[in-house]
Length: 394
Ligand SMILES: *Cc1c(COP(=O)(O)O)cnc(C)c1O
Image (cartoon, rainbow, N blue to C red; front, side):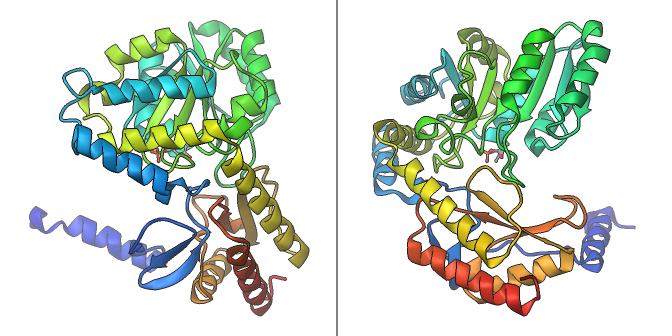
């Protein structure tokens, strides 16, 4: 066999096709906004993480353009060499103020942040206890660390405590990791209970608030703010890629965390810093959230409106507590058929099926944004009603 023909990859791709899970990447021909040009067709976009509509906001775009004029297109190096231009520090100070935390360290993305922070803050002889539904980037971060790991059933506090009782004494540091908002169902972590257990068993806590930052709490300060737990969570991860509308990730917490990460976090040591356009744009978004609750108010208004309309039609929208609105269809093939029919009707909602979610719980995951107009939402609800009836779902 000639290895250079990558026969083994060709075979794997054929298997994807045989399994019915092969797909092409959809192409968006313009900005990510309430309506997008997907594969050449104008559709209402119910699939982005652009919760507040900031990805294409004029103020955010202008900030990016100005930063390029002043600082150029790229950082030029990793932060430990000459890539640490002053705007990054300014963004970190602003985020610390916004989050009511002592210090913030920024990374190139939320994924980078998780894989950099987790391996830097635990070591051999430590234990990580992680929720079963935590995000893939947490799983990767845990894999890269030298600590042992244990998984508790999703949001099952009795199981978490069982693990703590059983294992706490055998380890030096124990770190409990959870998503703040779980992205497939839109449910919140039981953070007050997790924090209480962590305090009782002398553990550290780590909350990945990628879907909570810019969404929950006062003007989007996040899940920790929502639950009034300031000062009681050790590591708070946020992303600048979702509600903030740009790209990047950060950890908020104590100054010692930041100092240690500046010496040990591998994405910071070995990968070029965020570009100036992204840094400045993210700063502008955060400033806008600090000036007013207008964006988060609109997001929640839209989400409540959409959820109540779908509920009245008879759809099962699960137990979401956030603007993430799953419409549970169940059967995998029917879920994908529903998504395809919606696209034909001018609404883009991605179908999510096994293995991303358990078998038989296929769903359309509607991502509501402050950028949606009432007309957009009504248009989408109408399409749901028509397709739902034609497929016998409602
Ligand atoms: C999206 C997401 C990330 C990754 O963030 P990026 O900035 O897109 O890399 C990390 N954690 C969670 C929980 C997420 O939902």
